Image (tube, rainbow, N blue to C red; front, top):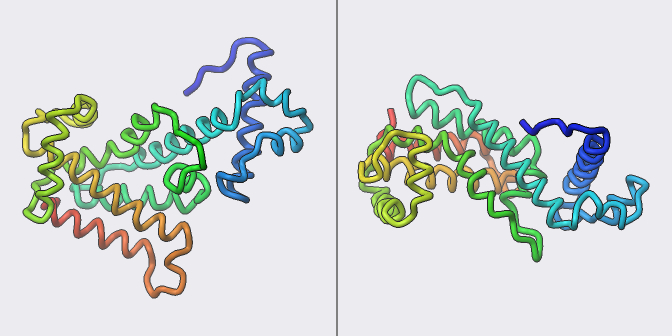
Length: 235
């Protein structure tokens, strides 16, 4: 939790920044990321454009704040899941939690997982924030055993663990596995596969691509995660 600004001026500045972000989120919900415009925010708040730039140096800084907040909220929703009696049950609960978060605020989901705004580069710390969100999946798949069907991904995870210390750090933040342990490759490989399944299904649902089809996205997601649990022999 962020510390409360100490003095009146700092508190006022923090309050105005939050109000600016609230207006930006409303723009985001109404028009997508390309609809976020500082001049329009300034007009709505009764400020001049130059005055607003005292709080955010530009649209990119404002988007950085919105992106970080969305990743953090998604991560909190996933990390708040209580583990089930076994890894398979926990995997389904994690997927359902992320699905529910995305459906509850699709504009924020699309901000972090949809097409990027032209010319916008997300902040570097997004990798760490996204790995926090994916962390519970690492714990789940560390309990698995990879079948032949997923070996191509597992092989790439072995290379990743040998060549990227940040992958090792991520693994060790969630498990006590040695990077050379086969379960380490399962942990990361299963997580990457689960994340891709989640976003494939959730993105299609959030953007209305399932309209007119005869299935529920939640049912599809449960089946996909169940098949993935089978591929890693999760019980």
